[in-house]
Every structure is written in structure tokens, then in C-alpha cells.
Image 1 (cartoon, rainbow, N blue to C red):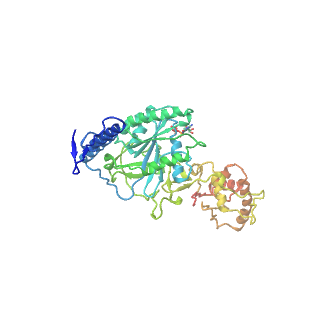
Image 2: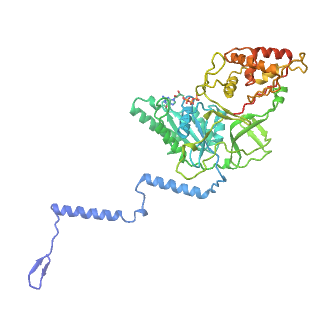
Image 3: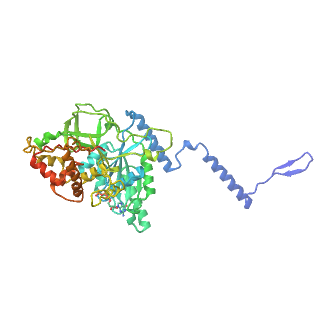
Length: 493
Ligand SMILES: Nc1nc2c(ncn2[C@@H]2O[C@H](COP(=O)(O)OP(=O)(O)OP(=O)(O)O)[C@@H](O)[C@H]2O)c(=O)[nH]1
């Protein structure tokens, strides 16, 4: 035993640490803990990873970085306003493709789409336009869609599971550069059991991931509300599409291609009359993507064949991006759309005409009383109203009527009456004699009779020549006299 002897001569016992008992145990525990933690904090990076998932993530990131370094950077050659991105909606029959496009169009434009036909272009943001296309369910339709899709929305019937169409389309996408893909599960309202629904969602998600890649986005549409997808879910899906990035696909950036959203047969009618099976001239309209298209290059029209271009013309943008960049978001006025094949907005463009479709219940005519006058105060007939009414009741087109018309240059009767009526609704027959003018007054009455529903031939003629004042009797007279009829049916709107 050691003994210290102090200056005062007293001896002190050295401290003996306790080896047993509660306090000894406590101390040993604390010492061990300290020792362990010291070891842990020694440069943890120098040793193996601690979290499995984290290591996996780090590794895949490192590989990705390495791959990016090995590849040439993708150069986006596009300049100016980008053409709309194409969103292809694909899925087996009756899965809800049309309904989804209608819901998305309604979300973006606040307009109801009567039917989905051809590409539908909409302005979805200040810098972005989208073109929705429904993918046909045959192999050719899928191949075509894979060629122009920037994003493919794969619709899957959740209550049924994956179907062949989805796998086929995925395989086709593989060989076309694989654009962005997003899955959408529908018909989930058919599950009554919540547990089963949850399990099915999980199962389908993992199946989807094995087909595409781990973490591929799968969207759930829980069911229908008043025959439409819930607004909140459509809104979320639309947000995803709006912020999605579309990296350029290398083959596409080096080849010009057009998704045709309108076509028009511009073959001269005379050529058609001579031979109904003659070669046609067709004008195709659409946004040019990829690179520049030159006149004279050969083009391939999917499903039709190879052709040489007769000409290329730059047209004004039918669905331009909003110009002012002041406010955040889009004002309602700027939410534009263009869907010439679907009849959205009841507006249809043609090369030389614009057709406006107005539903019957929006059109109101003032009533015509039995005496032929209108019931309004001034007792005047509106020229425009007559014009529209006569056009609505036309039973055969003008070319058919012209075919039936006979022209004789010399009249037997010296007292003939000429009337040249033009489609602008104005009677140009100012050369009438006085007695003819009197007859004209009578004509007014008989014309009104026609309006009340007489369906004889002269009535048809009257209607076609838009604003004519001929009565039945007069028409017969004219025929027998062989007067030349000049009919123009141009309508200025
Ligand atoms: N219960 C239920 N019905 C749905 C759902 N989605 C779509 N439908 C219905 O399924 C039917 C078919 O919808 P469409 O949008 O015409 O399907 P589609 O894929 O365009 O059909 P095709 O053009 O024939 O291939 C419609 O009657 C929809 O109301 C859903 O999530 N739940």
C-alpha cells in the first residue's frame, strides 16, 4: 500500500477507485460509451458507407456524372419561339383517352371540347404551347405517334392492369429515341376495398418501374365526378406537364418534320370534273419542327408514301404565344387554342374562307306574320336575316343547280325581264320598267309565302340566290322565256 507523508508528518491514503458496486458500474459504462463514440468519429468517410440506400444513390450519381462526361453535350439548335410540344395520349380502347384530353383542354382553355379529332394546340403558359394528340390503337398509329411525341401519357386501366397496347407502344418508343413517358392510372373508382386499391397501386407502380425506370412518374386518377375527372387531379397533372423539361432528341433535331393539324385539297375543280381520279394537289399545314425544310426535298407522309414538295410557305402563327410579359401567369384572354379538326371554338379555317358555326339556340329570328311583314315595330325585313334563312334552307349545292340550269341566248318573247341578283343581298335590277316595278310589289308577297314553307323548285332557287325576290309564277315565266340567270352565292361575313 502506498503512503504519502505530508509536510506536517501526517500520512494520506491514496484514492482507491471502486471496482464493485453501483457507482463503479456506472463509471465503467460511461467510460466504455465515450471510448466507442471516439472511435466512431474518427474520419467516418475513410471507411465503408453506413447507409445502404445512400450509397446506392451516390453510386448511381457518380455513374451518371461519368456518362455525361463521356457524351457530347446535346446542343439545342432551336431558336425563336419553340413549336408546341406534342403530348400523345395512348392507351387501350375505352381507357379514357378522349376524356383525359377533354379534361386537360378544359383546364387550360376553359372551353369544352366537343370531340377529339386531330391535334389540338393550346397555349399552356407564357413560353409554352402544347399539342394534344390521341394515339390510334393500331401498330401504324403507334409508330407515327412515337415519331412525334415529346411526352407520352400512357393510360392504364387500373381495374384491369397492363394491356398489350402499353407494352407494344413502349417497345416502339424504345426504337424512336424514347421521349418522356408518364403513366396515368384510370378506373380506380371500381375498387371498393381501400386495401386492395392500395395494393394494386403499389403493384402496378413497380411493374411500371421495371418497364421504364425506377421512379418513373405514375399518376392516379381516382374516378369520375359528373362524368369528368376530378378538377384537382387534372390540375396536378397539368402542372406536371407544364413544368416538364423536354430534352431534344438527337435524330429529331437533325431532321425536319411536321405534325399535320390541317389539310386541304386544293386541286382545281375543273381537273376534278374532267377526271375524278386525277392526281390531287394537297396543302398540309402544321408546325415545322427539327430543322429547316427546303423546297424540292423529298418528304415521307406516314401511311401514304414519298412525295416531292411543290412548295413551302411560312404562314402566320394560328396559335401565337402571348406577347406581353408583364404579369405573372396567363390572363384568361390569352389562353388560346387551335384545333381546326376538332371544331373547338366553332371556328374552322380554310385557305380562302373562315367558317363560323353558331348553334341554333343562339340564333333568334323575329317572327313573320301571315301578311308577310315582321312583327317588329318598323315592319321592316332584315336583309341579313333573310340571307341566313335562305342559306339554311338550301337543299342542293349551287354546283348541282348550275348543272341543271339551261342557258338560251335568244328569247322568243320581246318583253323579257332581266334580273341580276348578286349574293350580297342587293338587287341590282335597276333597269326595270315601271310596270315591272309594280310586279315587283306583288313579288314581295309571294316571296313571303315561300318563307312559310312551300317546297317547290322555285323556292329552292330563291333560297339559293340569297335574297331573290322572284315569286313562283315569275320563276316559271322566266324559264319559259329563257332568261339568263346569273347567280352568285358569295356570303360576306
Ligand atoms: N368509372 C370510370 N369510367 C371512366 C374512367 N375514365 C373513363 N371512363 C369512361 O370510359 C368510357 C370511355 O372513355 P373514352 O374517353 O371515350 O375512352 P377512349 O380511350 O377515348 O376510347 P376509344 O377512343 O374508344 O379508345 C367513357 O364512358 C368514360 O366515361 C374512370 O376513371 N372511371
